[in-house]
Length: 132
Image (tube, rainbow, N blue to C red; front, side, top):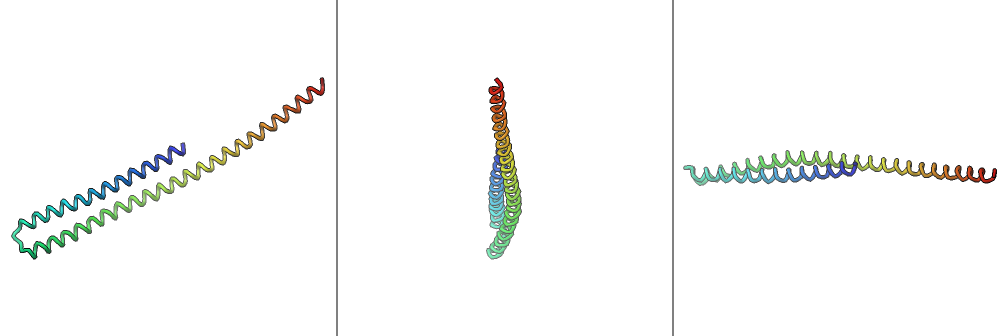
């Protein structure tokens, strides 16, 4: 049961990492598409070359800042999820270890009880044989 829970957490972590990677690629693609669109619009306007270059520079800076914000926001979410997953996995491992120790102690105690029962039975058989 614990192993399944651990595997589920790991699978969920992988899916979130993949989702974050897809979101990052989508953000980059969106920035490139917007930049290309802005570049095309600027090329077909009646502005001078200097004005066009200035506008393209500011638009590129703005897009880069937007992309940084997207990456920072998503990386923060991913980091939080990873931290939570690590804590959950550590707790699951600690619980498993504790339960394993309890089972070992139960087995040891059961073994001792069986040995005591065997000795008691042997003594009873010996008494029965001595009485005959």
